[in-house]
Length: 526
Image 1 (spheres, rainbow, N blue to C red):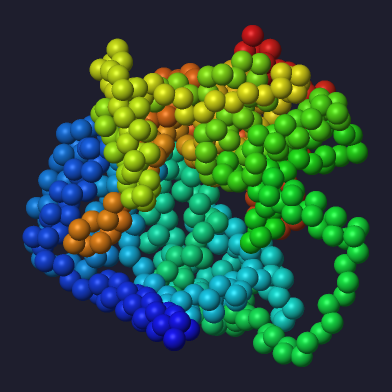
Image 2 (image 1 turned 45 degrees about the vertical axis):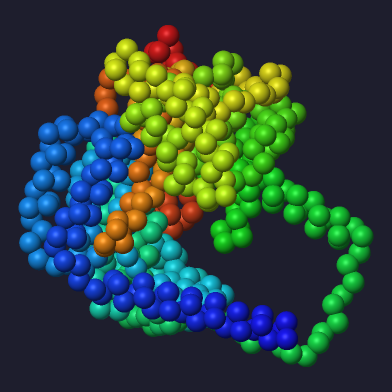
């Protein structure tokens, strides 16, 4: 009887899930009356004014008011949710706050489809690409059947031109302020997603390349795992030594934030030359790993190897937790207690209220304490802005492990949010020599912190809103641009094809030349 009840419950749960997916997908094709869409516009503006502390950082408040008023007046007929998104999105982009975003609706897969596709490999799996001058080129084709030459231009995916994808979707990516490096970088890495979003997950696609002057078409297929052999095979015994090795690997993967999909670690220390006094610390994100343990271990290795030249690689690090970035910063400077400057919020209750949007109902009693603390910790500063006077992070590191020798930092347009903040702090402290391209985040900070998401009542579009303006310990007069490199270097298509790390190799050459460029930079500063 108990088994029967369980089966009935699971069946009902599955049916409800299927119904929910069908209902959600049907809503995407449903037109919403104009009067209800106008209510959604008012809802959006109300939430932005309620929670966002720096809406007018890059454009005037009068301009924002005008944009929302004009949008409301322009809605004179029913629209499907994504038709409404097309009208609403330009306002969000004009605000130039990368963490504050409106999301379109995309059709969902049911559980069976989700499982099926999760275990498969994309039809694009064998290819890597690189955008240059608004065109996309093949970096590598690892397929075994008729591989295409590296450097060939990709013209079409099925009947969709890459130019169409560029013109239609690149404008939907924006970071903080006026710089373009963030959108260039992100689109370069994610443009294939836009084809999938438009056309769905496909089992086969046809790619059209221009190889020299000759158009070449190639069919490529999604691959699925082979059916499991039902025949029971004897599992070989694992020795104690093998078990111990596996245990150590699992510990390292947990500590250093291992990603199964990319097969890389969140933080990774390596020695690129025979000289162990030169090290590279690659930090892919500030989200994963046991940060307190791993950074202590990393900088113990740095000390034991007597590293004199450390390269901090922050390329394509989209940010994460402030505390993670603060821990790293603390091992690179003598005075690391301050990591953030201003912490501006919209009003005394905005930060506390956003907590209730991010956590489940059963946690509300604890959240009440947190929101009360934030309320009494928020006071007006000399500029009549509400400042949150509570610590976002507190770190304590071993002083004898703090690295005090030459430091190079590699940055690019994918260096965003927390990685842009740590870069700004290091540059303001005159602590590092920067190589690469302008960061995607604003030098002077970003509006992020807690980022509640709100579902619009009628269109069901979702928006995320940054709630805290987080600034570095020192600001500069120029706003809207990121941390500039001391030596600007942008990888070429040839660099990508040959897998030549042009930024790192430039640094290694500077080290060989007695840190000539680094020393000149800091002599000029002094």
